[in-house]
Image (cartoon, rainbow, N blue to C red; front, side, top):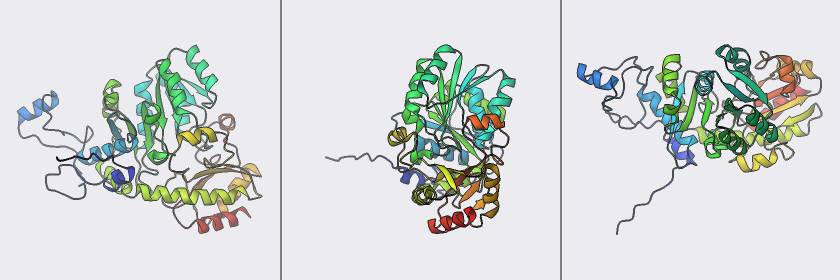
Length: 405
């Protein structure tokens, strides 16, 4: 008797074979870049059937609607996020992380209320505070680690249609209980959207915790080399159609180009290897920072005294990553001095690249956020955010040590 063994894919294998095209007519081993704006039909009848959704054999017409290179990257990222759930998943690629985030928000909360985590990426925060109200979207900020406050907000505002979270808060590194918040949100009829850029599917998979929609800046860890601007959304199969997200992307025009999709696929090939080294280095750098006299506090998800350590134990997998924030004695002036003294680390915004990046949120990424909002969210003037790369940990530590003198 022949026995068929069904092997479950691992994240390592999904990523290593990310660039393998599916059914390429020429048998290409690496996914080609379909650098074309439009696709031809054999005849007028085929074109008519395509636009009438009567024939799936002709799958492409125009690259703003879909492109083979883009679609492979979409499916690989969807497979990564959906690794632990039984349902099929689907992805959508965008021209930037903010295009993915804003399109998702506009589709899920048109003219309604959003319950948003108080500490968010600067541009997300600015969009919710300044732009969303112009579209009749009311935003309520809340500490997601206060589950009673979350529950009360949902009970007292039955028109909340979306709860917006980050899997690891930027830049304070707080981690909330996605599963419990999702249960509360779904009980009230609200969707849950989670930006998983910091954690990535290597460390956290929000769909497995019940979330409805996951967002990524593919610019960061998924690409890993700082060579593109891109974003992605992932959901269970059918969710995009349910919320008309494909129409939103089509008409907002935020789809990624084929070259950026191809660069994403190239980056994903080494994703698992990179994440393992980010994790090793992050732990070593954090241990150095704990004992430095110029530092008053450190935020790192691998810290034993992290305020959310119990949630982290159950929610994070495969370690704690390479993102660290720390507070300097001396506030804004001290932060700027350290920025001007680093030599090995790159003084740059963004994160998740193979090299170490360091930045000062109060004067850089979160300078666009009102000071009072920054302070209430824990983004103080002396806070430094560090994206630990995959170089020698000893070289990273030596550079930080001299900059802190």
